[in-house]
Image (cartoon, rainbow, N blue to C red):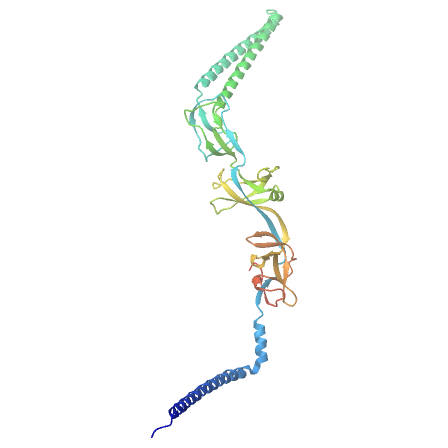
Length: 397
């Protein structure tokens, strides 16, 4: 049996349409399942949230409380804050005495001291050959003895003449001549003695001696050397061993320093400080460097070597100011500031003027009176008006 033309095409079309219907139903089934799963998940989470949120107001209150930060604060008060000026400079002998040839000089026979030795006033530092001068002194001593003998003889003759003049054996004119001879003899004795003393004094000046007690710093003479008044400095002595530091200060800092203020000096390469005090402040300022010199007196110590470099901390004065740790002081484009708390425990910015900064902390020269509650740390994380939970601390502990 033969089908009509076009019947096969209709059957194929119907078959394809049935297949599309079945695929469409499957898609809708999958979509329905996905929606059902999403609803179940939503019910699970939202339902659990409702159960746990039965006490929602209390939870919200706890969460708000947990957002208030706990901050350490302190009341600095006012204390004595020293104003310290720092300086650098060189070490030197406070009174350095150059020692040279005082007499006529000669050949050095012995050098008796070395640098670093302590000497007494008048102690011989070096001996100069005095063999010729010694012989001259002996000759003059002999002349003194001869003159003394002549004077004794003249005195004896005068005594005898005085006994005979009363008896008429000697005239008064002869007696006067005897007295004149005696006086001349005594005068010759004094002249000879003066010449001897002069020679002895010259001989004593041949040797090089310490003008004052102190510490020998340098030596520039050796045995066999010929020295004279033009030989220059042979020894340098620090009078009493006293040292000083020539502290160079800027013009502004020099105005703060006065005679008698204490100072601490630390030589380069040493961790030890030496106490001293300013004994002289330069009356002039170097026009090139705009600096002046404060001279700090120091007692002798073997670690203080003239010519060495050192740093100094000079106490220029003292003021009663609040003192805070460095962590409490903040800065921005508007300057230095701290946070203080008001009566409601809210952070309030307070601009301050910073004074001296030391190991003890930062002194506040302006902006605080010392009775405020100041935030010690974490100020950088606060905002003006932010409420905090303060914990009062004691500074220095």
